[in-house]
Image 1: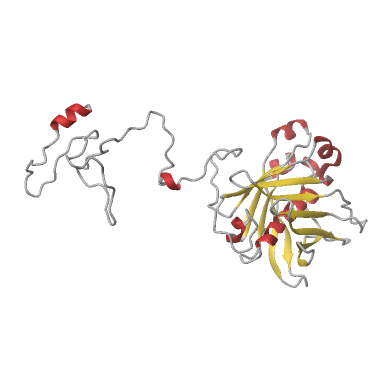
Image 2 (image 1 turned 90 degrees about the horizontal axis):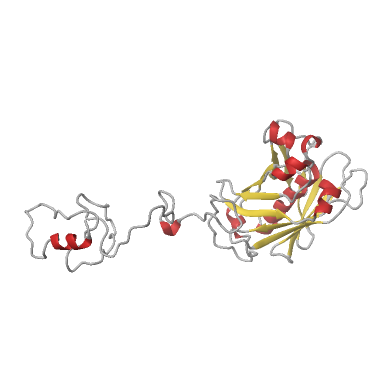
Length: 321
């Protein structure tokens, strides 16, 4: 039914309706009663459309076939999740941006609201097929599975394939707007327990160029041990791993402890991902737990510690793990 026919059949303003009976308006293309060309919108407490609802009002244009602009069912358009961000995989739900706490470096406000981080390394098919080491990529999520950051390694081909897991690297951490909010830098150093000098270190910058903390390996003949430091290189926490770092059929926990090593305040866990993935790829999953009220800068340093632990103990490919 076109607009002209609908308007010709529309009731006049003086039309009388049966007592107690609602007006029987035509179907979806109805233009609205005279004098009310625009639907005013639901009022507070409005229970929803009633029987005989006239449908779209004047000026309403139907979306073309195949229109995909609306959000998923249950999500109003203005609250639609941030899907398909530039440079990001499709169908990704990002964590809403919280209000930043005082003295919070830009981009770290996400960490102020969480006490757990999930780090999922992506499988690189080119690396699996050819055996050549490629730049690592990671999805960083909260406990609800919402994306917080996307991390990508920035290392040249020769360094990756000549130095292997001992290579120096730069990892750039991006937010949902593709802004670099953190930079992790690992210099080339010795990773042998037989050599107590020139041990492993990683620097965490947030934003890039401004250091917020460091993670330094401590020499120990048996245990993996690290010291977590703030931007002034003051010791804040310690990280201690198991004597035997083996990820066969079980998670591997690196405990986050107080400086006196008496209290456990969190952990970094390398999660078991199944025999096939563990045997044929070096793509690992990690979980990081820490106190909710921990300084956001130290939370960022914990994220850097996770990457350092990954490269030192779990980055070796395939059967070399």
